[in-house]
Amino acid sequence: MATENQRYTVSVDEGLFQEIENYRFQNRFQTRSKATVELIRYALKHLKKNSNEESQKNKPILSEQEENLLFLYRQLDQRRQEEVMDFANYKMAQSKNTPPR
Image 1 (cartoon, rainbow, N blue to C red):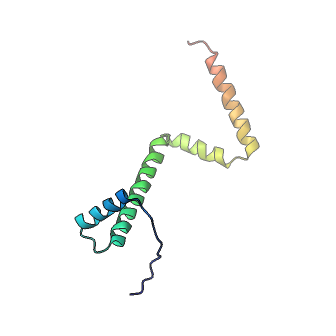
Image 2: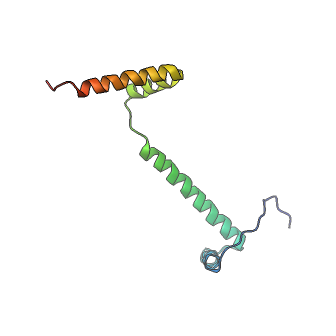
């Protein structure tokens, strides 16, 4: 029976082979290949989900004004970005040296 699916060989140790076989029989897959493909799909789906969750977790929450400023900053050329950073660093250092009122 011809198929349009790509084929390749995977070598696994005895323990992993037995786990795949157990999964196959527990879930009533007709072939080892179908069980393996399902396991790969499952793993890829969860890797992608976890990756998206991690990137969302690490993404700082910005106000709309901060998002707009960041967008404008990214539109500047490198020299202008450096000038903005120098000014921001100057203002932060200045505010640290200002006594509280």
